[in-house]
Amino acid sequence: GWLAEEMASGGGNPVMEHTEVDRSTNTADMLRADIKIEQEVTAEYDRAAKEVKDPDLKKLLLRIRDNEIYHTDVFSDLLKEEQS
Image (cartoon, rainbow, N blue to C red; front, top):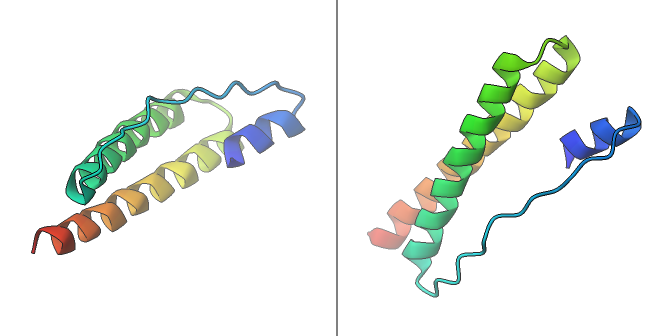
């Protein structure tokens, strides 16, 4: 992802952590799980952006956060369609 690439280009060694995969087979349940994860990740990027001092890194974190917000909106729209 964008953050890992930025860290690697600066000589860092990014560590990737993965959440448990939701094994739901119901579309609405899967979308709800996706929305929950996107909201959690959005909050983490927002928190990190508030703590970081480097303006370029802050800009990147906010860009990623905004992308997660977009994902939440897309999944929410799909969930509304699924439930109608």
